[in-house]
Length: 155
Image (cartoon, rainbow, N blue to C red; front, side, top):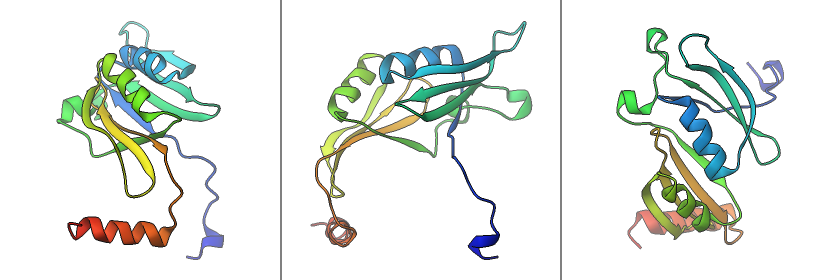
């Protein structure tokens, strides 16, 4: 199958499952300044079946409460996550400090990286990891590969 026969992709939305969607919405709004676009509450249970937050001008993050009866569970229920969300900002250090002050766990403190970004990683109170970074220099793919090779060789 060649690329011309594939359906055109328009957008990609991360969809988080969390153990307390109402608290997650509050955390992401407080820490990241996200705005609530949509929230669907399940009558009688208090669970949030679907919510959408907008980060920046147009980046959408979807989330819901856990629904274990349908196999929908979050990182805290399965003992971790295999996904990291990369949030590119103006000042990574400041946002990492803000996230930690609001209850996130510092996984990796901010540091300059070989690929031209300064960043660090936090785990939010719901078990999701966020790599928060900002650009510090433009690095060509060739230079990035050279630096990566040196890093992997121990240099």
